[in-house]
Image (cartoon, rainbow, N blue to C red; front, side, top):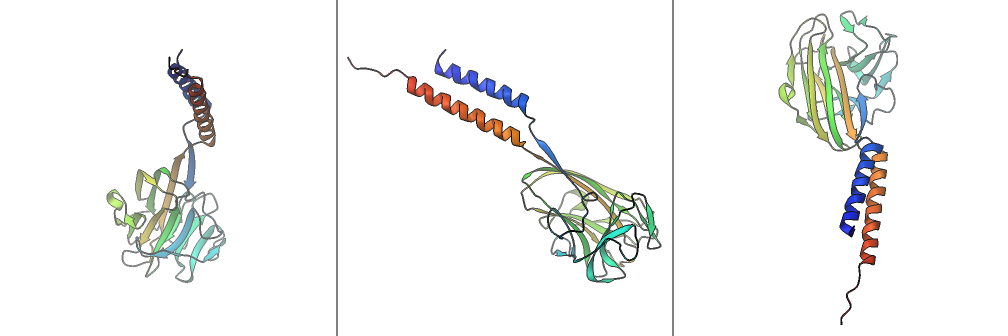
Length: 249
């Protein structure tokens, strides 16, 4: 068996080992509702106000008991008007009726704009990867005025009906606008979910559910690849040393 055949044979063994010993990727899952937190308002998920696609100012006030409602935790600005803007979560585990007209399920965030600013939930990509995004916006108020919702990647309006904002018409609680996308993000990229009052800010409670799933290489996959390629390189070097040297007559 010549050197090339040996190398090819070893390569086949390494490839088989790679396919058997480690899966191609591991999923990292980031869920806006499950991951809602009251820690430092930075990191993968953060909560703020501003102008959709233009500006983002982190909210500064977190309360585990929002405006006296023991079942609601929320982020707000230092000087909210009529409690808003805010980003809130129902922590009771069951649907609650709060603030008179708001039907607040436990599986969505309540994203409510203020009189002069949007409410924004921001996702910052922790790794470079192909991300899938699924979720929806939904009406939470029993007497909604209608809002303008938006999805923005690094300040640019995203795909489809969410490109620059889409209106959610007045309706009964539960009226939803779903989204489902797959796209690449670099570590540090910003993805914003925005809710604009679209006019009056009263009765603009809007539900948001969003899940990012990122496919990234398994550490074991990288380690096995490094070992395999290193061994192949060593074999090539050995074969070169064993090549016969031509002697002139």
